[in-house]
Image (cartoon, rainbow, N blue to C red; front, side):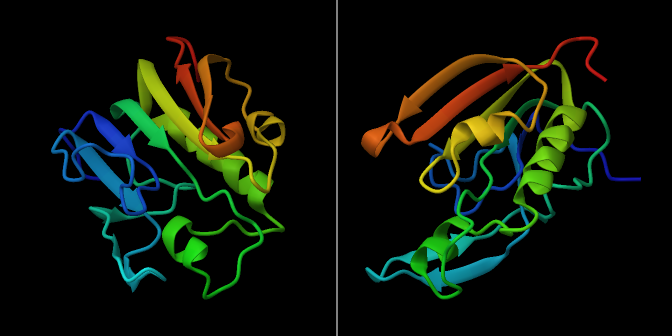
Length: 164
């Protein structure tokens, strides 16, 4: 059985915690499949240091553990092994990404409490959001497009009380 945690927020694939206002926010548990340090092409240091190394497809937490879950998975399926984009954002498996993202959504809703919020972020540079959002049967509450050419999507979901 997984240990109990007091933090109400889970970031399922935190990477370098780029969009967090407080990268060490004590209210959150940060997980990622990677634990790495890199120097980017412009000389900046990139630190991917999750609290817990975990795969978003199979999280080590009990059901209904978190009031808020952040799901910002890798969004690139075509990227070079040594590319700075892969270092910064990670990469999807080109053959299994639909099943992987589907499993990620299922895990997000499994660990989310009833009436909890899932924050999903996706950049559709390579994979259209319509293909990704079709991988969950849950209905979004808010959907905002941002970024250069509106390719980044922030989508919020509210977990129903009766969601299994």
